[in-house]
Amino acid sequence: MSRNKRRFEPNPKFEKIIQLPNSKYSDSEIEKSLLAMILSQDESQLEAFQYLTSEMFFFPRYKQIFQLIQDLRQSKKNGNLFSYSFHEISSFYEANKQNYQLISQALLNEISTTFFNLNNFYNYIDTLIAKNKLRNIEAFFKDYSDKMQHGEKLEFNDVVNDFNEFLLEKAHDDMENSNFKLIEEVASDYRELIEKIWENQYFDNVLPTKFKSIDKYVQGFKPGQLIILAARPGIGKTALALNIARNIALDHINQLKNQDNLVGTIDEQIEQNPENSRPKNVAFISLEMAVNELLARTISSTVAIPLYFLQNPNQLKENPEYRERFDYFFLKYIKDMNIYFDDAATSKINDIVRKIKHLVKNLDGKLDLIVIDYLQLISTDGPAGNRQNEVSTISRALKVLALELKIPILALSQLSRSVESREDKRPHLHDLRESGAIEQDADIVIMLHRDRQTHNSSEEGYERDRFHGYKTTITIAKNRGGVSDVSSDLIYLGSNVSFIDENLDEMRNG
Image (cartoon, rainbow, N blue to C red; front, side, top):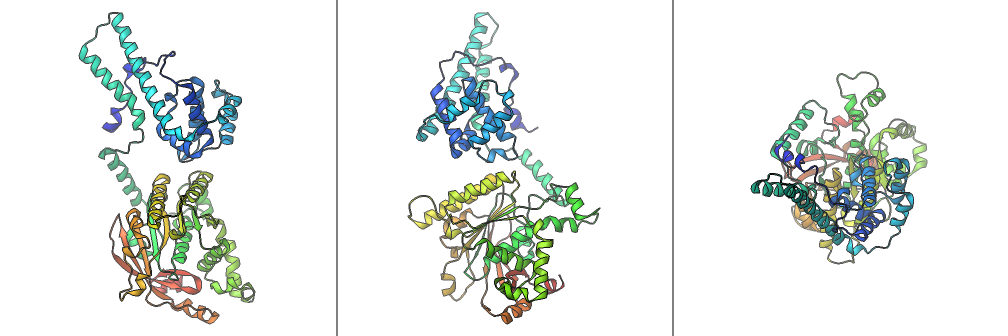
């Protein structure tokens, strides 16, 4: 056990010091109003559990209501990341009411309909915490006063030390969210991580893109990272993002196929190792393309059907080879490809965050990657103003969300037109549109560049670039965890809206 954990363990000598049942340091209306906000407002509920515990409530039935919601949160995996509706709280109460004898459904209904002023939320939290501290001090003085009145032998320095230790222990509630960790703790976790990688057991936390040009520098996407994929229009940033989403969604199958000691079928292995081999869940939020267009591109890149044929179904019907591949996609891939598309019209950052949290909740915390296409189409809730300030708010919100959910977020971004107007057309960090905040918040920035773009609109053109492709330079412009300012090449196959590493033989023999 590390030293900083030992420091805040409850001291047994304080176990008998309990708050006085008739204490004047309480406020029934504040406790009731806070609970009304918690039951009615998602954001208030999440915020309240950052600061409060049930022990801070003085009145027993209000204390038990807060504990009820806390128990509901703890009953769900990663439940502390989400808010719960009044209906969910009521249902949990009905299923477990024997554990909550001091409250009733009628009381929950009464509190949920109590009028409150949301502007008082943080003041009420401060007041609740302050009154709880005063009750603790009151209890300490009462306990030691009784000892003195009974003539118990006490030393002045001991009493002072006890009081200081008592204050430190009771103030610990305010420090639950402290992120300070002793190096001993961090080193132990880090060693465990390294050993898992050695044993090829680290499935769930590092997500390889399956592109050597990316993975050899960034070693896969990791929890809490904000990754920016940037390019000028028409270079293929959406195509690459979809390719990465597909690769990660199907990676559990490849992991099992590559095991030397595989026993039984793939399906049997998944059943025996549900956590290590479960399908990866990917959320793909598009503010530019409809779901059917995203699906068509996914099919095209997965089974090598030129997108032209999917956009012209009658020609697909007349081509036996591509028709067979189309059927094969639905037979072989669709069951194991857990990509959740969203093309809703909303572009507000707060709406996007809420939708993502709702999906994570529905997946019981098992969302592995979030892709957002693209940053410049997102807006904030406030009135339109300085766009750079808006982008700063958006990028920071995405970074905070990645850290909070412990999920990597891949956000697509446009590059400014200035790239095309200069002689050296290779992009740099300052070419990110509204770049300052994006550059600062991102852990990794990946940039795509192609010197010459060719757009084939005919079937013959699609067939030609299927075998030749266009060399596309990929640059790791920023990499907080490793080497940066390095470039390598991918081949873009425009017909199949897919990228491959530069060695085309791998594609032809695959």
